[in-house]
Image 1 (cartoon, rainbow, N blue to C red):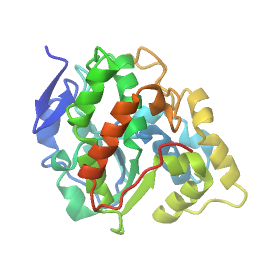
Image 2 (image 1 turned 120 degrees about the vertical axis):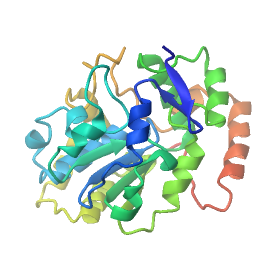
Image 3 (image 1 turned 60 degrees about the horizontal axis):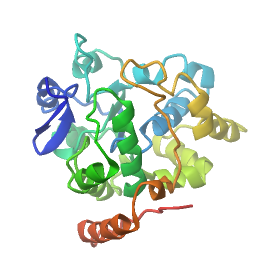
Length: 283
């Protein structure tokens, strides 16, 4: 069996089955669902933990009672022999925590009409590419690219797990002013996590108890989460190494050549022209 294939113009791993993609067309969205949506390796787990902690009234022990993989319905993948995620999600009580990397045209169509609360995290594409390249080498259900140069070309063409970075980020950026959508940048989380936590809490209408913000920031810092077995997937049978790696802004410099960086800047300018969406590539 092939490790991945292209469906609807998007490259998907074999664990994103045809059944899953077909089920998304009629997946029943609830208005009180809580969705965390990202392009792969853009800060998904980080935002999942922030949302979990705030939902549980900043009770860290309660939030982390269950591994983060099981707190959220990850709609994109199914373990061989297991029940598909959309079936499990249908039986979960509200409010459901849902995670997905699916592109807009393969997303549950009711997400537009039911308008659940959605947090979208965007990450600068150069760091996102570098992180995804490493993830392909550490996750045994994904294609292993023979070199960075091969992966770079595929990423620019949108022919990697997750499809086109440009299309996905532009889609959610253009929806950023809708009341049920919060667009957050990964780099802002690195710069001032406290401000992002406050923004998320205000978006959902969840109050942070007096004096708790600093504790939330400490608990949800990348370094803390990397040491937390409930958020860093060290025990996953699909991972050859720990799920969380560096989480840095600027790591792309260890991968992109000067010519690739310049070429990519031109591609970004062309693809995102007129959008107003900009990212920081170093802090």
